[in-house]
Image 1 (spheres, rainbow, N blue to C red):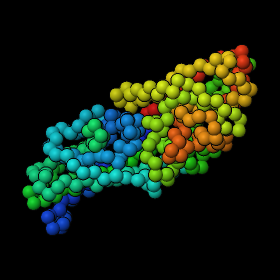
Image 2 (image 1 turned 45 degrees about the vertical axis):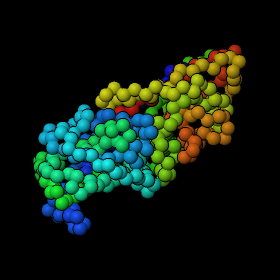
Image 3 (image 1 turned 180 degrees about the vertical axis):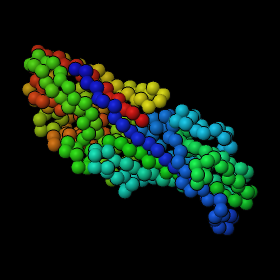
Image 4 (image 1 turned 90 degrees about the horizontal axis):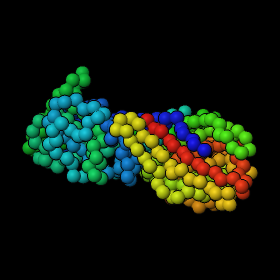
Length: 337
């Protein structure tokens, strides 16, 4: 069976603020730049949600300033003319910063403050950016702008210190809120089996291993990329199959990302059941009372130490696989970033 989701929206935006201080800690008030909107680049959004180390990247970011004068776009790969990069960074904890939108999504607001050492940035700057400390990947940036939205500049003297406050706002599947099914429905259809036509519904899972409020930063998109689990009508996992090879994640360079789980076949003698009510994709856990599925909300169990899965598929009525049948499963998830 070939199962593919509708595109799942992952939103990202951000803004930065600038403050300048004298050596004694006194702020130079006239040099304060209030929150200025910026773009999260295509590559930046991809690395935030899917990159190696994934969401932990938020705890390892540095600020940059430059002298470029060209408006940055989502296709930008860096500042126009880099001048300096901070050498320290601040970690975040998402606990308390994630808010349910009551529609199956949540919004996380992550703010960090990065300081340049006194005298490190001297001269006139016109642009600000944010990079990952891991591999120096450019995440976001924009020209400095005034209250009217027009490009402007900021001059830093040799006895002054520049401090950058950067905020990222990310929106993603969460599974909490008032929606009736819990996990967001992202696909449906019918598969043909030896026992007849079976309807199915596909449910995407929360971005994180656990749900809102947990401090674990790893995303399922980075951590839960492996085999399939079969689940009974009670939601319990009953059979684990797959090559345990990681799903192939591809980015088209703009807004499209595809997670292609490995096509895997269960042979006639491997497993048989008349109660295959769910198949989940992504988890590598053994079939035991972990990675179960809540049959009401369609949410896959997880914890900071248990990856859970990225996708749950419900079959109505349950699938039947006899000892004479083989079964091939191939699932693909599409995202828009």
